[in-house]
Image (cartoon, rainbow, N blue to C red; front, side):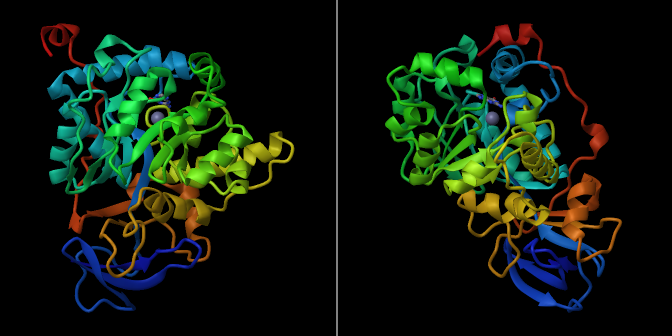
Length: 417
Ligand code: GUN
Ligand code: ZN
């Protein structure tokens, strides 16, 4: 496959007019100037950039976006747990994976790390869907053994997916300390072979932190609970991390774990304002995620823009807040930065040998100097004219098909499983 366009590899540099040759899922040649033959996609005015990577989302929440007015714990109880319980119906789970993948592709997201429901079959459907839509993924069943409806509690961990299949890697996902006993956290650790990704949530809301303190009175702080179980590793993704003390920041930095900032979700649930200054001062590894459905936007440029706006807001309202990331910095974060955080060292970049997970864009402007700023602040999914995942063109379903379905009837659910 041959692509032509202005190559936007590193957002800190202007795009370079040229072409890419793709074979066997990889970029095998990068050329400047005119392509050697007629391209399969793009032209001299197109932009070619890496596909976006989302470092935190929940597939079973794909139809739960926008239930406003609740704080985190009430929203989980009233909106999210019922939506995830619907996944006990296997055909429903399969359809929801398809729906989520279609929308991710439309948004240009070609890789993600995320959560399924607590049901094993969700993983099977992700692997199946990945055959026709080869989105790269680190994904795991949600693990819970308390403070959630019985339909969502893992009875045993006998059926935790542990395979590495094609582009789907399974991770170990204890939901968060409120829904996991010490026994479950210990079991989670025992199931995480070295190098396995661990995903969880940490200190998203103040009420959550207070409740965790009551449940784990002997731990010095929230991050310390996960650390006591050996769950803070360089392969650990800690979503949110809004309400941390300095000892927690220090610990996370020492463990080289990744904090996944979810700015749109923090605003939607009014959970708090992420402290980017602290993350930088302690040298914590950082990624960024949509956190669908707490975050309303699937589009990673929208999430990246929200990251800038959150930082600006802090500087206007909080003494001592200083750092505001640039558009180029957040653009790089949703491509190569998130790729590094997920251990995909061959992704999020355009170079020989890199995975061919690419977008061809035709935005309605031609600037070079302010290209990334303009892309970020005017972003629309229909700038994307071609999506290439694992070296082949993939078609996202058109948006009108995105009907919001209601779940299977409660009768169906009672009958089975
Ligand atoms: N904390 C525990 N579970 C969740 C979830 O599903 N979404 C968000 N935003 N926070 C959580
Ligand atoms: Zn989450």
